[in-house]
Length: 279
Image 1 (tube, one colour):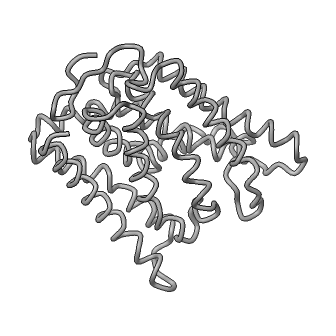
Image 2 (cartoon, rainbow, N blue to C red; image 1 turned 90 degrees about the horizontal axis):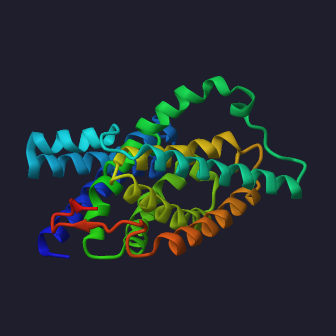
């Protein structure tokens, strides 16, 4: 990793953490903070996108911003692969609920399964603000390519995943967030294989930010759709533990089939700036 790339990544992580944590931490440390935890989570969640857009705009100007935004809304995406990967993720979540049902008759109810008409507007909101584009413009769209320029896709996934995990930490102490009901250690274990799957999707869809955001949103929506995450009414962790195990099984298969170096069957090359040269 050359000095320029190292500097770009350092700036990205500093801006991302500063933006997000300065919004989240007041809700953690100030009693009876007037803004809800969920609202703070959404506002602070813009950090990775804000950091990426600032850095791209400064280095590449309006042309660079146009490229990253076009990528974010589907330009060049390999739709077939994205559809198959998204279906796989849905199946993993559905399977975790079915397996959970073998051990318990007290499955948490899913309002979305009962009223599927609301799925589309919820998906759109999540895609834009709930872990989709607000995160993936930065994590995958800016940082991942630069890390893969030095390390294998698997190693880059783990490297970036460490920052991704720590970045979420304050959200676990915000009242009203899904993370506040999950032990941090369990979230960490789940995010490790998810990060590898995110790289796999990104690399096999022509480095599509849209695909990464779509896949991320499918995962988040599936938590709600199949009621995998614990809730106040149903705090059991069993479903989430089962899902985490399935994540690892799927990730092992992906690494074996696609290879740890690129997580794709075609060769992926990056220039020193972290942008794609050939694939």
